Image (tube, rainbow, N blue to C red; front, side, top):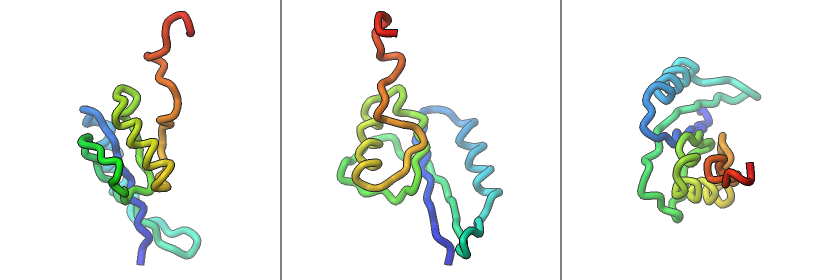
Length: 104
């Protein structure tokens, strides 16, 4: 039986990048490594409402949204710290656009 590693895509309104990523992952198929078979399905994460009590099934979340919005950033911090989910982007860093011009 294959081990399933669900990849969550946290997106804004973009369509090109996630469609291409889903197509590549679909072509990849199962991967054999270490005597095991691994599957990497991807699904788009519903943007809201974010429930801090929700325990996600994701092994990895690719974040393309929290750079612009604060609410998903807090949810990402929670799932990284409490639910052992890997994040491709770091929600703990300060956003460049929120830095005052004098601090740049």
